[in-house]
Structures are given as structure tokens and as C-alpha cells.
Length: 416
Image (cartoon, rainbow, N blue to C red; front, side, top):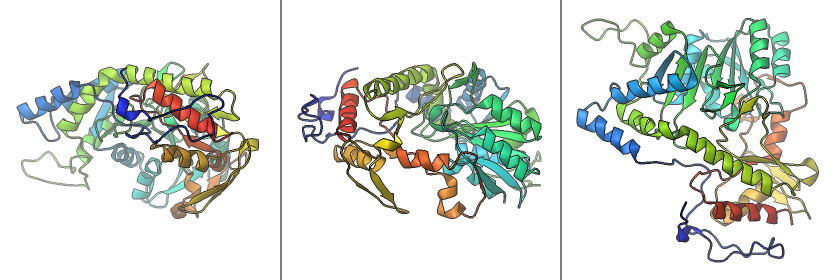
């Protein structure tokens, strides 16, 4: 890959003597966390939608991406929708959530995983995270069923592209007769014991948001092996129009269907999924090797069980290497310590050089809107600990090795 010279710092001293000194200058062009990587095929299918005049929610692009995703994931039916949030909403409706129903939800995730539960009047009960994958803890889920035995729906996410402990979560849910909704928004293309994520629940969802491993700029998809469920979602997502010669409606509908134009972008992206995963993995491995001498570790996974899609490379600082960090609702500060650092310092330092990093997802039970909701844990508050000590590193696959090396040296300087 060629290097755009205007992206590189004007001067850079990455020697051991230079670490910790202001030798790296601010990048002229921002290094992003994760942005779309386009290949040109996308325009061909957008043009096809334009030339055929199929610009709305019907067309060849929609049909084709539904077929391609079913083929990739190994599910029978896919329904292309306007967002993964819309897909999750449809999944929650399919699961029959009624006002007042409790639903077990991942705690450390993006709010979109569980907001659709609230749309239907459900009450999220948050299940703590475990350290092995940063996903829902099966032991905490079992404990939650002991406390709330009437719950019949579990919604869990695969964080940052790493599959959850699928076998254990499925076993717990089967033992208690609960339906699973798998939020695979971040993990499209990842596998658990050779099986694609997005296929472990009765209803599953993926995302084509602009920062995802395959993008449509927006969009999402509901995946299922249940034909009746897929047919219901196709109806609900197009305003629940009945089969009549006029516009007739017997139930509430939604404007959730994906457009044929957006589907054209996704269609052009699909052949590059495996390439994107390989390039994301290379970024992750470079970080892992470079940080082997720091008191940090990368977001974990069990290589004997799964292959992530490495959507975002994240790191967590050892407890003993954390400097003092204070976070209010909207601000953060830190006190520097010799040989120590914290996410706030590292993110601030990266920002000085025009490089984007992000905090780890703040757990839902810590969010102001959900602080009164139940939270179930068996090992302290794991999600809060990961949030306190973790951060997301630049993982854009257009980032060059040289640019990533600059990121690495900036992170290292924070511990000097």
C-alpha cells in the first residue's frame, strides 16, 4: 500500500531515546478509528439501481445481498433493513416482548443492543461481562435466571468482533426455555467453532453502518431460519400493508426496509469481507507484538474456539500500571504517574496528534437512563473494570504500517 505523504508527521523520532519526547508532530490528515474502505464495485451497483430506476425498497441489489449473506452466514432467510437497530426491534417484536416483561441483555455494549427492548415496553436486566471475551458472562446469566425465572428472552452482543461463549450461553438459555437474539452487528464474518456469528439465536442481526467491516453507509439485516418470522418482518418493515388492492392495515407497521441504493453499496462490499478481516487481523497482531513489553493486553479471545473479525483492536491496562483517573458523567481527568498511564491520558495524547481512539463501551447499568435497572454479576463488576482500564485503538484498514507505528510509539510514550 502506498503512503500518502501528507498524512505522515513532518518529523518523527521513534528511537528509545526519543520515546516520551515531543518528536512526533500532529498528523495533517486524521488517523481514524474505523472508516469505510471502498473498492469501486460499489458504484457499479449504485449506478445499476439508478439506471434501472429501482431507487426505493425493492430491487436486484436487495435480493442479491440477502442471498449473499444467507450463503455466508448459513441461515435460511435474511431481511435487509434500514439499520441493525431496526433489525433488533423486529427481532424483539418477533420474540413477543410485552410491556413490563423483563429481558436479559448484555451490559457492556452499545445502547442499540437493548433500546429496542424498551421500544416494546420491556425492562432490560443487565448481565455482567466476563474477562475471557468481554461478552455476556454465562455464569451471571445462570444467576439471573435464578433471580428472575420467568424471563424468556436473552439479547447478547459479540463485542468488537469477538464471539461470545456461544455453547455456554445457549446451554443456559435452553435449560430455562429462553429465546436468544444474537446481536452480531460488530462480528459479521467471525466464527465460533467454525460456525458464523449471526446464526446462534432464533433471531440474529448484523450491521452495515459506516464504521463496520462491511458497510452500506447505513443499513442492517435480520437473519433467521424461520420463514414465517422473515415474512412478518418484511411486512412490518414496509408499514404492515395487507394484501389488498388499496392501502389496508391491520397492525402497526414501520418504515424499516433498506433502499436498493444502500444495498448496492453492500453488494459491492461483500466480495471484500475476507480481505477486510485479514487486514484488521494484521493491525491487531502488530499492536499485540508491539505492546508485548508494556503492562497491557489486547482484547482477548480463545483461538481454540473462535476466529474474530478483529473489527476493533482494543487494549486494557494492567491494574498495577494504572495512574489515577477520574471520570464524571461527561468529563475525565488523570494524574500522571511514573511508568503508569490510563485510557484518558492515552486518548488525550492520541488526539494531540490528530489520531482517533475511543473509550470502551460504558456499561449500560452505569448509564443515567438505566441506573435503576437490575444488574446481575458473579465476579464483581467486570464491565465497569474493563471500561475503566480499556480503550479502542485506531483500527482503520487504510492506516499504513508506518502510521500504525506512530500510534504505537505514542502509546508507549505514555508509560515512560
